[in-house]
Length: 123
Image (tube, rainbow, N blue to C red; front, top):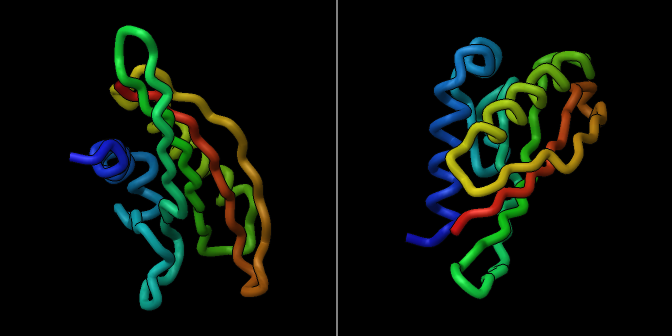
C-alpha cells in the first residue's frame, strides 16, 4: 500500500475516533470540501510525501494540510478544532510527528477556518 494511503487511513480513523473532536464535527472528515455537507468538518486538503531514505532504512516525509471549517464566524471554534487535530496527529504511531503551523481566516461566507500544517516521518 502507498505510504500516503496508509498514513491518511490512520489519521482519518484517529480523527473520527477522538471524542472531543467528534463532539464538534460528528466524524465529518473529508478529502475535499463536500458540496452537500454544512460545516463543521475537517478536510485533508493536501498530502504530499517525499522519500528521505537514510543509510539503514527507508523514510518518507509527509506534509499534510488540514482545514478545520467551523459552523460559525468564530476563530475560537476553528482553533479549538485545529488544537484537537494537532493533538490527535501528534499521537499517531509514526517515527516523528510535528505541528508546523496553524493559520486562521474568515472566508467570504463569514465562516471561520483554521489551516493546520503537519509534518510526519514514516519508515
